[in-house]
Length: 344
Image (cartoon, rainbow, N blue to C red; front, top):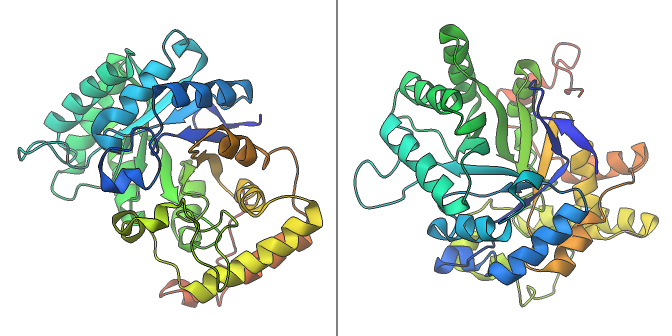
C-alpha cells in the first residue's frame, strides 16, 4: 500500500481508505449504500487491514450514528492498528443546536462520536459542510481546542467552496489556530469540476484531498450500459439516494464508460479499477475513499492498486470526461501560460 502525506502535515495515510456509508443501512437514503452489519463489517476491516488500508472514514449522520457504532465494534481490540476519520455538521437531532458548526454542536458531536466508536481520540475530524450561520472564528477556535485537548489530531473540511476554505485558512493563520490539512471532496471521471478551483487551491495552500464517491455515485461500476436496465443492486435504485448525489447526463456518462471499457480491455482490468487508478494519479490526491457492500467488492476495488495508466490512456480518459467550463474558468483556460493545469 502506498502512503501519502495528508496535505502539508507530517501525517501519512494510505492511498485508499474504507468508507462506512454502507454500514448500518438505517433509513431509505443509507439503505441505498448497503446494510453491512457488525459481522460483515468486521470481515471488511480484516480484508482492509491485511491490504494496508488502515484508514476508515465515517460520519455521525451515516445511519444516524449506527455506522460509527458498527465501525467501533469491528475495530474493537485493534484500534492501535487503525486510523479513524469521522465527520459532523449536519442535523443530528430536533433542537436548534443539533446542527451546524457552532462550538456547542462540535464539542458535543466529538464526544458522542468518541463514545460510539469506542475510542478516546479521532485521527481526523472533518466538518461535513460549511456553516454560513456560524462565524468561522467560533468554529475554528472550537476545533483548535479539540486538537489541544487531544481528542482530535488533525482537522479536515468537506464540501466547501473555494472561498469557504480560503477564508477559514486565513483565519487559522491570523490567530495561530490549527488549520485544515485535508478537504474531502467529490471527484470522479464523471465529476471533474473539482479541478477548476478546489484542486489548485489545495495545492497552493497545502491542503490534501480525500476523494469521496470516486466512482461517480455508483455510475462507474461497469454495470451501467447504454440501453441496459440498471443493476438490481445499486444506490441509484433508491430515489432519495439517487437524487441526493451528483447528477450526470446519460450521454456524458456513457461516453466516459466507453473510454473506460477500451482502457480496461487493453490492461485486463475492470472499469472501476481503471476509474480509481486514474484518480490516484491526479494532482493533490492524498486519499481515495472506497466503499464496499461485501468482501468481493472490496477486493475488486483493491485491484486498482499497484499499476499505472500510460500517458496515452490518461489522455483518452481526460478527453472523454471533459465538459465545458463555467465562468470564470473557461476564460482562464484561454490563458494557459498564466493558468496552467495543476501539477502535483
